[in-house]
Image 1: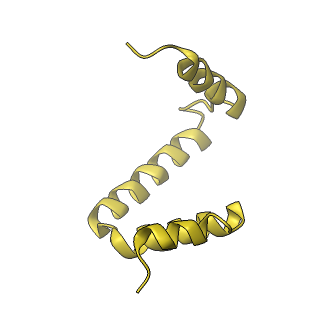
Image 2: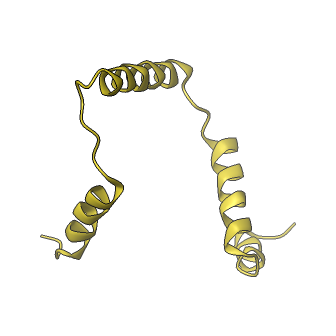
Length: 78
């Protein structure tokens, strides 16, 4: 049976897309979603969407969000 290190060495030869697929499969097999939490997030997304459609919530552009996190990642850790 191959060791974890053997498997990692083999995975390193795969394309980035295949690596992501493998990671996704392992995570989905390891961590089972909590149905109650999933349903809470579904309801929250629906409430937010309805608020947006009614004009009660503003959208933030992708560029603004990414700019915020890029600026944060450039800051040294304290």
